[in-house]
Image (cartoon, rainbow, N blue to C red; front, side, top):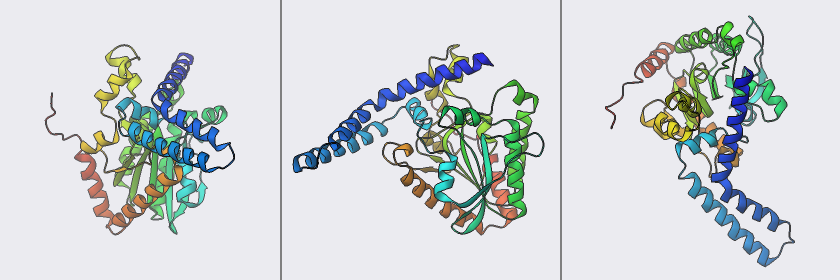
Length: 333
């Protein structure tokens, strides 16, 4: 387990360095704007600021319009990217978080509870990462234990009982791979969620807001609509782990990311997601308010589409949707 933690730590440091590389021109322009902004207002200074801000917008558009799959993976993991509770704060009112799975304990990597969305009572479930060292440890880096999935299912069944729509937010490297999680049945808890979510008689809208990693993501990923933010990823395995398997070396994540086809456009093409939510220039972390507004409008529209469906029709359509996945046309060599 210590070796696993050391590997995760080294990978995170390497990812930070690579993220800084492709964003370096943006960071340099932001630094120049900040330094120039410290000078007293003057026509010449204001003109220079306007020019630099224009350059910054153009550079963001250029860089984020041409990201490789590996770079998209790094953006999906960005430390300042909005997390589940950031969206809860911006989109919902009166959020009441509920804790515990009534079997083992509470898992801070999974948040769940009830709130209001445009005045309508709803249920919210999502993985939550931390930002500080303390909160990262508390949230277990967004990797739920089995009790996290059991808590999520307990809350979702309550939502079904009281006819409340369910919104789930996916953002996890995967379920926690430790011995304790295995001993408490993490695979079984995920499988149970998949079966149960397929038959819940209320609308379920899923949104991938960062990383969608393996079964850890699927454990709250069965829904009538599956959205993904533009610079998020959704995959059966991380590029680093895939690299370790295919090349017996974790140092080929770029090639692995290309092979996995884990970006939003790849997933939409394969029919694994229903809609891509466009992000502001520079990614969701560059303008959390803008992405929250865009996402909120999408969720409102999709809920309106689903609200009028009979429960039997809703469940049948959901079944057909997931039953049809994997039927791909012949792939090019």
